[in-house]
Image 1: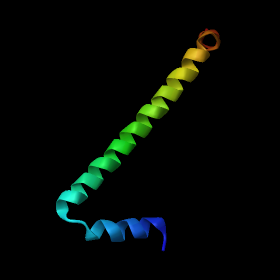
Image 2 (image 1 turned 135 degrees about the horizontal axis):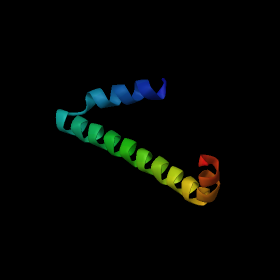
Image 3 (image 1 turned 60 degrees about the vertical axis):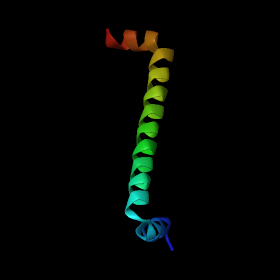
Length: 57
């Protein structure tokens, strides 16, 4: 069984309130990933600020 299939199967067994918690957790993970990517990009920009300014000329 594929992971997504197992997830759906287990999700369907949960009561509605627990399903809401799962959805909230998924949204949390997505936001965390977005913040992690933003922090990575901010670091790259900070580390290369001088080179980026030169390229912008």
